Image (cartoon, rainbow, N blue to C red; front, side):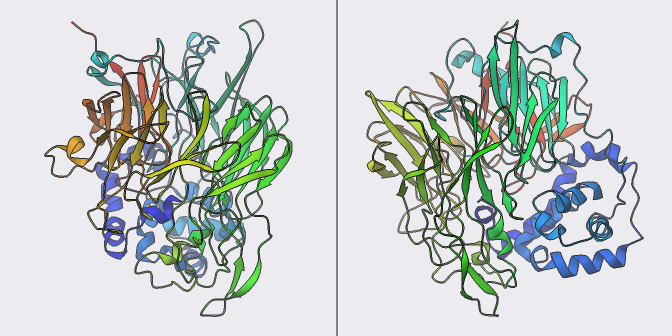
Length: 635
């Protein structure tokens, strides 16, 4: 979803593509790769073969200006990283057509480095190894176990582990780590057992000690892990079972021992070469629920690509064994050939309706709720731009509430793209339900609350699937609106807006910021627009894409420019802020910076500390910092 949201036309992409390498270097991002770089040399061999492979299989997308930032970021990494991406990761659809020698050659061609089996041996170390005492799983700490905090996705915490406003004003970085081979940081941290669990750009999952940041264990998945690590704890200290569940961007699902990092089982969930997982795993009574999306709309930029065949789904697994129990489809019909584009390439449909977000679990009704994206080709149908309810036991689709009909869009529709033959005609507005639905209790009634990129907020009756109320909160648009999540506590909804720029749409002006609404009817309680957030700061960007974190008195947000804010939950007044793009010293003794903060990784409050993943290189400044904040002592 964010691939299409982050690309803002030829001019911006050209500038960004040219600046990525310089920005990464200035930010100290390459410091995390120093161990790997010392083992590799500038490539001379295989250059001719690598150039041919790139021209034949990669250039149709990577050579266009709108992809400049991705190409630039790939060139900042090692050949080993690129080889993994084309072999097992999101580019496996291309790499599957290549031989080992061709994958090696193109990896070395893109990076200017030799492929080396030992190059990354030590680069995954980000902090000192924990002592035996600090590696023990503390069963009394169940602070934040999943992406949404609870099964309703409310992203709120209360009790002894939260900070009072007076403590928030004294927050300072306590420890910082930078991940290997990373130009962005977008995994939502979770907290349990005294550890912080977080995934990374190169697929390494870490369990870090909350207090010191030392490494309890690390595990290398086959592809990037951009979602949260879901922790499930059973038993007590005498007979404890703690497991960590997650999925990578190549749709491999994993179960680990949460105390040791030992692999229990692994299973690939979707064989389509463009399938991926961007949301997080939900769990209930021995069942796991994994949302499936895809990057096929990006492949559509190539006019010779037959767009499109992938369809979103929700998959249930047995948590004990990884066995697939059911697949819930967002589209009822199989894709079939329905026509041809302007150069004669087949068009397939229906497609899309991906599930980018984390399922909300309705334990009372034994149901699951997810939001879906647009279709990728015409005809546009199949529950796109909808909130969909699934039966928890069978995967049967119970109802679908559609927020936007006739929305067919893919990345070939990006502004000024010279290869737009696969763009649907007419082109849809691209207004996904990117946010994870929340289950909010209001006066003994449950509402499903979900936000759209259109700027609309919807409150839905879970029994009927009908709207109880809906409201335009912000302007919205294909780059704007309500992106990846919200928060709720005590009957209040905290709704972020990623509106950017000052251009007009439907006579509406951009309204970036944070909005507090009454859950019962959508009444606005307070609003922090750009002026309230940025004051007179000339280069401040108040857009908020990442989901907030709510506590009884403080709500935490992070902006597209990389600043973390704490606001008074009752009035919206600013309490504290921190610019994560400043130079930060890591536990490995290196210097790094954060960057723009976006995607599904929002601030986390756990056990009196604030944890922030900073550096969303797809939208805003690249960065590489995972920061633990703690209040300075009061003298």
